[in-house]
Image 1 (cartoon, helix red, strand yellow):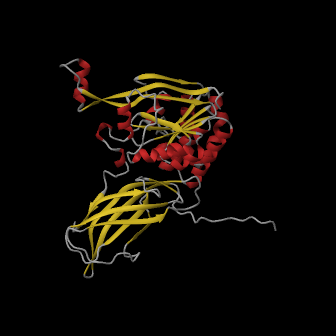
Image 2 (cartoon, one colour):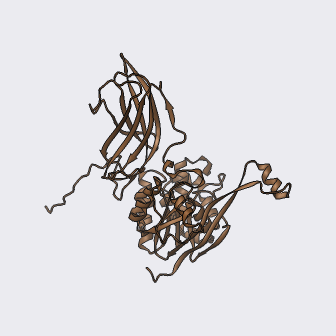
Image 3 (cartoon, one colour):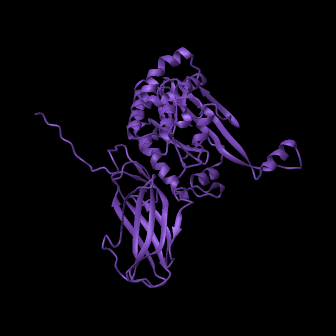
Length: 432
């Protein structure tokens, strides 16, 4: 692979956004009214260098706001860089914002021609690909109806089918492989495998670390616009887990950033811009309620090594931690957790009453630390953790403090089965 030609080269790439408190400030600065700047600058990318060779599948991972989508939009020409250069050798198909170029008044067939033309194909070339696109989308007679009448599922199926069936030399994917139902997703991943086997170059951004681990030859880790490193999927996923809790140490080779060593260390620790990345998995819009006779003061997840993280390897043991302060005397508090999928379906959970692990009275001022330890057998993907302290006062069930969807939990897996759980089956195939 070292001798392969460069498909995408990113050199010293920077993207700076001007942020204004109000629209009038933008107008006044443009017209030159007053002295000084009326904006603050947000550096979305800071001197990033990446070389992607032909035939490679390269993943980009990082927390929200790390610059992943920005770099893809610059590579595909949707955005212009502030500084730096991007060189692309080959025709790109980009799965960024699916259906962004669709006309809602046109039917599916008309939108296929519209999108194909925008991608640089002639009408004859689009006609030759039409059957493959329609077969892949599999939306039946709806293809003759205006897309404004489509369900969201049909819309993304058609958009994905158009984008992925034009046989590009370079495929750029941003979180697009999670569209549709499980059968359509399987079809998408099969197409992804075909692209890899054909030697296509693939640049892949996803929060699904399982897919990153399974498909990528190499992974680039970004954080707050800085490239922290690149390496094997395992190396970079391990580093990403450290970034999430502010424990990442920048290697001596961490090099090409325009920041100095101290700034790099601050970025890696999630301390720049006043935002700690260790809180990136905490829901800012969580639902909180209860009588507050007990208060959940602290909560976090640790992996089997005791490292605070929001990413857990499937098949490994992990811990859910709660620290609870008793504001009043409580006869028998019950400590609980629940895990939901991102659609809000409760998948699993338990509490100290079910586990028969704590059935004692507590006094005001006491602090209890609760640790739930279990094996992670959920399928790879994103989940939400809820926590609670409840109990019975007489015959009445009482909520003292409940935090719904308080933490994001990412399960990393390179082997998923059907449904919510993996039953860890073993298989024998025997000659009859």
